[in-house]
Length: 88
Ligand SMILES: [Zn+2]
Image (cartoon, rainbow, N blue to C red; front, side, top):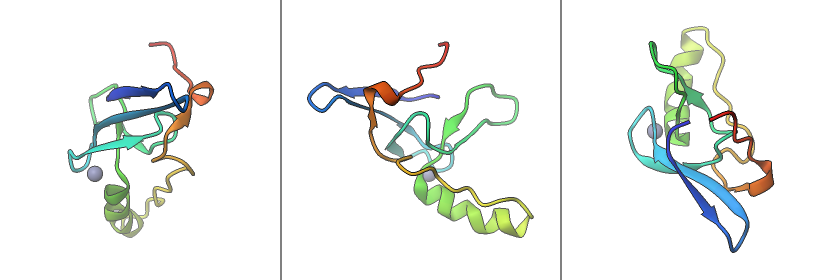
């Protein structure tokens, strides 16, 4: 996931802020829950903001694809211990 990790030591929460794949706007999200798209030919999943999810869903349904349903808390900070940091 691309973006800047922000750690709030006061509350012990973590979130990532980065540009949306769809619209390019900066937004904050939970790094393990946010819906993401890996661009064709790319190997890094890029996060998608809620307004883009809502924007693309009607087109997805029309094309026979399932709606993107963000996980609960996808756009909220995460508890530090909740984060799966992965291998990188
Ligand atoms: Zn967006």
